[in-house]
Length: 108
Length: 119
Image (cartoon, rainbow over all chains, first blue to last red; front, side):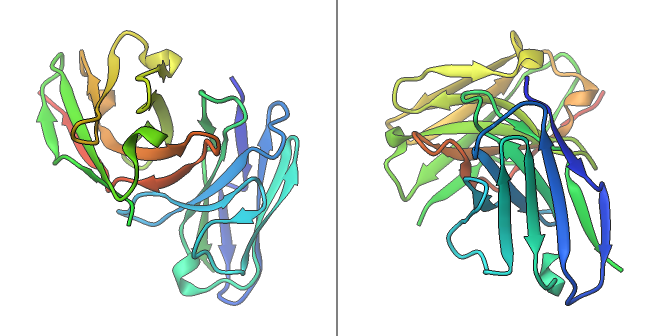
């Protein structure tokens, strides 16, 4: 099983600042990496797929990068609606998927 | 527009079974798969399994093998997830999510179904 490890567990950021979230895979997943955002009481929402492609309707302040085992999600200027939990997910090992444990982005 | 609408909350006793439904609309059901993901209170996302709506092929997470069954009814564009021999640690919100045939990420999600296991 491919293990996905996210860091940090919690990120405290002021509105308007940049947030950088990391995700590491225990073995290469190529670019088969997605990021999801989850707000309290809501289902997860797809943000990024293919490591760097924004999903439909996702603002340009969200960007993804990386390949192989190291990935980054960057939120360039945090808005109030961006405070949430973010999960990475590998889908290289289809039909077996794994999620990271999540990074909570909270208001500093 | 694509929608996945799940059945309502359930309360079950330990040892019982639960069956959650996920009705799809707004796309060709058999052109995609459905994965099920659960989230225990205050915890992260756990992938449970996947079913192809095209041919019924399935793949389940190792830890749930033998307790979970995923099915589809193509006549109603509905996917089902049945979990048996429920334990207290199965208490969670259960989500269905659409999976592309070639894309393999989860692009649309249901609203979630809370399953509570309690004596």
